[in-house]
Image 1: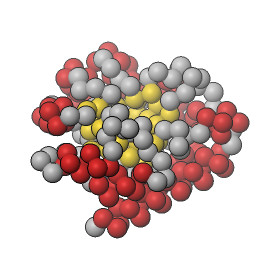
Image 2: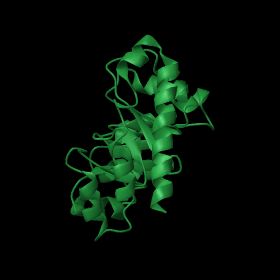
Image 3: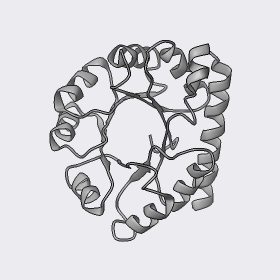
Image 4: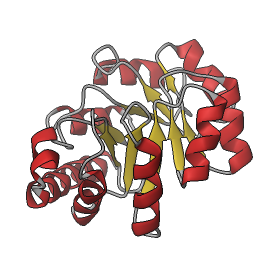
Length: 208
């Protein structure tokens, strides 16, 4: 998740074409794809994508709110779990299954709690509140926190977050375009993915 630096977030009101979308994103260099549990048929998408893209892309489950959801997602083949909250039971379920866990937090207290519970990474959520400036402020007293934003990431803000100290970015609609998915426009998705991964890679190199 960290090496590529871009996590594609798939949140749709249908499951049509989503495995094809995952292939297109992978072709553009994305190496981590999160399918939210609010997406109809999410577990089936995770199962098929994890089989077809095994060894090439990490397929994760997002919006995991409870431990039973975590176990179902892992059973379907999820390589990592993402949540909008810090729930000890969900984090423990991920640890027991041996998969990465990315809980959502906002305040320094929530971030520290997630770190103590063993979170792999922590997403700062909601993104419109957790600006790049907020990242800098939080990482001052918590330099060991491995943070990523979601919800406010586009081609302009992605490098700003990386420069502010984010280890990766979670990108939803700005990358996983609903019209492109619906129309099966895989070339457009691959091009978007390649652009995002290049921008993030350049920002990481500039930060060194």
